[in-house]
Image (tube, rainbow, N blue to C red; front, top):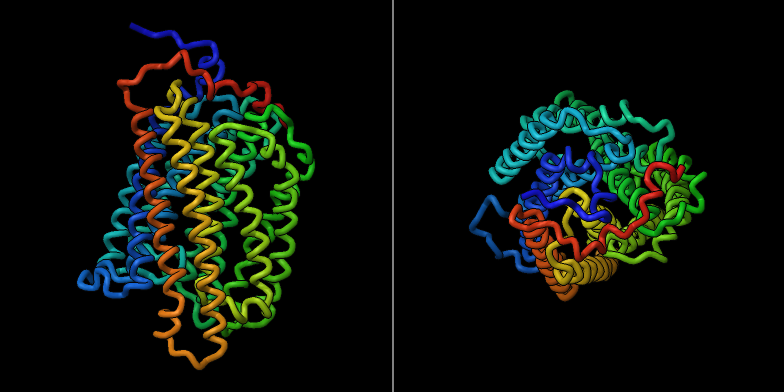
Length: 475
């Protein structure tokens, strides 16, 4: 028996959603598996900071390898799969055409995740590059380039074959990410691995690549969802949309130049860190416009907006703090301390992950035609995850500030420094455990929601109350 969808569901579930359901659900399911694995690895690495003997008899889980495994699983597992799934869905919906070449998307997804898995095995065995954000063994990286191209092909075809002449900010950010990441990855491989630069140029290239992962790939994919969902849910056009193109180009043109802030005080020409400071001030314009455009999120309600609201606040705050920390007088105390880890937690967990969560909570009911299985699990996920992010950021900031003071003093042995900041590190570990528990709630809710045994619930049209007028005409 075929159950006809309700009017609310049929108004929100488009042919694009039905046609691409299998490929997009594969990307989202894969991302959640990597999210849980990265959380487990983050917990192990956090414990080892204050208890070095933890798992000391397992050479494939020493702190250095555990941290590299966590970073790789988070960036190339969770963030890559989730960001690509959200991005493809957005360009398909806004383009008004069915996504094509989905068989390539499925094949690329399978080989991408196999490549990441092989890379994690290589890292665990000690075969890693030691380059930030690119610690995968170099023999799996060509596979990732080909797999990414297969996944992105559907988005490129949706962009080139769109039926609507006008474009929206979400499309700009997704298309930029689809094209820029393969260039970034291949260029990074060439200058750091296959034909490596020498001397300080190697450090400059590594900093540029790490910053590019944020500015050219993950941040655009995360912001694309926010630019689409906020006006859809609130029913309001963005108040300062005419500045959105400027903010977009400032992020792409100046974002990469901020990489030099990681080299403040290092053996590189002084002008590199100076340019990074200036670029950081320019990127603040991007954050300012983002806040002006999406401030309407403050007046909206719903599960998706609750995550996006916090994610946008974390994104803007991370931009401001990174600009401040790049100044030499501040970097003198906080550079090479746990304060850097606090900024990473704020940026990648507080901003990227939370914005992706908001997009997933909005996206899944439109893919399946059904509401989420449990509203209580959604609330639990939001409360626990935000609490974990805040706890990790605050505790690591305190640890970094104290650590910087001890290092400047120069009289306290390193072992005593770690002992003096053990309290904040314990809180950071507890925060990692809370975030892991929160993400497990999301995984349970996700698989319950997509289970074929569930039928459409016509009595719960809540997620489909958003106005459908603000689709591709918000420009």
